[in-house]
Length: 247
Image 1 (cartoon, helix red, strand yellow):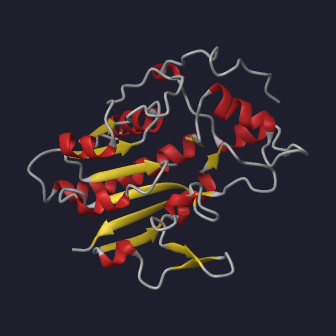
Image 2: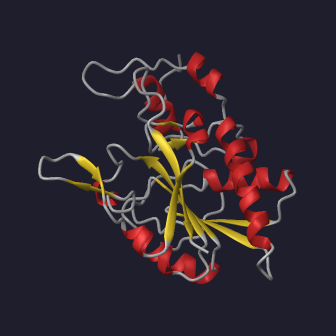
């Protein structure tokens, strides 16, 4: 079990160079995932993941490795058609932890990609990590960096129309909880809608299909994902979903 942590304003800034993500087995052993009787959170885990680290999605060591493998293959494919290194842009990246870990992992794998984290800091969050993050909203970041791949993890609203409209974007990844969606405004992003009974149903023709993108659930990543809401009853509620521009 973890010990109580400092309040958000007092939480220390972690050096990303020293941060080694925990593996799933160690996480399950170290933390109590029993949900609080007054909330659906497991407070022990929530205090560490959200309270100390400020993370919505914890980048387990297994997840970073598997996502790096996936991105490495995609970068190799896209690089064959590009005249310059492939750029991976994370938008609404918070402290940029995922981008920093992916960049480190891609370098080790000798994959020639540029990884950029961006966030407009509109939430005025207290920083918990010293990762480099460009202070740009997603539109500005896409204009500046012209990415081939965009990553959005627990984004605060539906940015995906902008992703699809940007000519350089060949693929975007959404990371988060899909049922129910972590942000109600993101229903259309996942290709869902509410019916007259208030139930989540799949759209007959999602916006992404109509705009020339194909969805692919990266199901092999789901067992490797743990978000800040994880409990003993629901450990792996997050998903990673790819949307690729049809060739």
